[in-house]
Length: 335
Image 1 (spheres, rainbow, N blue to C red):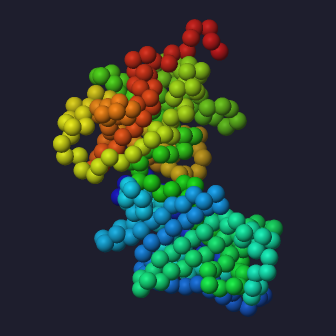
Image 2 (tube, rainbow, N blue to C red):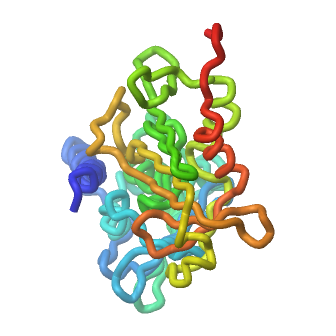
């Protein structure tokens, strides 16, 4: 396991451990009777999980025959375990802060008419658990929570809900999957037809981001062109579609003699903000670009070291390769 993977995994586990420590501290500090389990199950019995947000966006995960957790979609990609960490542990038995009411008389009062987050958990033996998180309490420490089939209203620790909700806003994509927060990109290198250009982000507290050429001079790029053509695509192409698993017959996709590649280094999703994180704590995405798809709208590509062929937007690739053919040099006299 690499140093950066170990570091990110430790950070995620720290968040999970922090949740349990905080929940135990609050429970021990309270004079109320022992708080009840909201529900409890064996984490090894969990087979699939689905999260649905208030705007009806859903993301699902399932366990395959090899006990590996994967996205429940057309990609069927294995999750990034540095991010996945203790998710099944969190879902195996959350202890409530307290049982608030035996029955919810006014769901809207607690945000239960439009749930902040709905969680569906499928267990072995054709069992299911469905819970819904409503609003946070006025002190922002807990969520109102209900369980399907149980009329009672409970309070659940806010950290528990926040950790799980983050899986919808920052899905645990594998490191090679190019769909990231563009503000976390720190380095970009584009290779095209035997030539390359590299760029780095310069970031200082209280000042705007500045992108520079990597080299002896370290000149600032033309910000007008950068902001229009490159910045919107730093987080990845708008379309990143799995074509097939397995790269046999590479010539069919133009990957046997690729002339272009796009390399990106970025901060992990849960990495604390730093001015210039050590390279060991960064993640790298490296896409080898192949030929155009038959309709001419996409390029085939292969993530480095992965047994997948994907397709990405033609305009996105062309904008990046122009950084080599016509570098974004700042016009003379421009500020």
